[in-house]
View 1 (cartoon, rainbow, N blue to C red):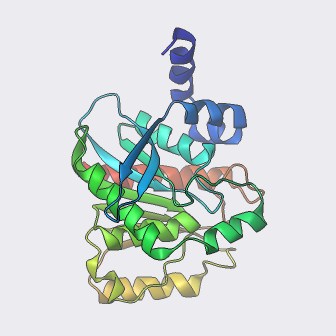
View 2 (cartoon, rainbow, N blue to C red):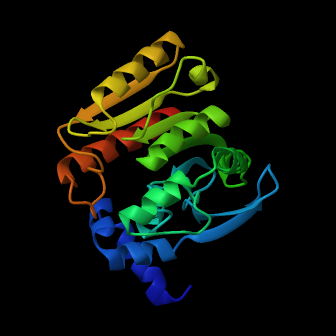
View 3 (cartoon, helix red, strand yellow):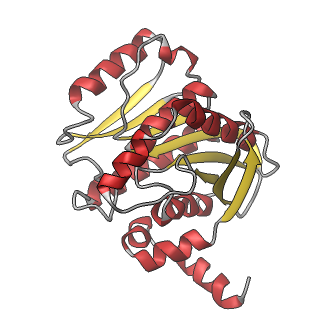
Length: 254
């Protein structure tokens, strides 16, 4: 790595995450610092992801699942931020390389995801992280919207130590939640028309019935409030949710 490139990455590490995410040039630079890794999944498919390594391994691992836009620079930048925070951070790809900024295309990509293949991808990466030479064996997951749903699905398919859901679909039965090993942290918005209070209250009831731990927080905001590129972005709530996420991982992945 050249000195200019190294200096740029050091400078990015000192910036608030929201600042990097809100600037496409900074997000692109942060994303470019990640390593592309490819493995053969348990189902025999070649799958790729973007890896951020911690400065002082061994470290706990976090698997990130992208929004319905695909594995873009924004999600890779969050992985870079987690790497700077001392985690082995892996941003996975459930779209086989497809990325879009068009809502109509994003909707088709999300609908087109095959649950069996996505589950295979998530579970394979979790096991890879759990056995990684730079890891401690502890693994957490985090995802946003589409990725929030798959953060939870991943934790059901290959139990992890901590799960974070940002405004993702959490409609599950106690039977489906039986395989959950670690606690769940949820971030939800009061003005969200899709992931609403009825769904979350139902989830809390099913989690309690299954004997599982759920810590949910509500924000006076709208869906996608943590995405600086969204018109619904709420800087204060996004910062608070991120602080809570880091604290949750610190508590359960240490």
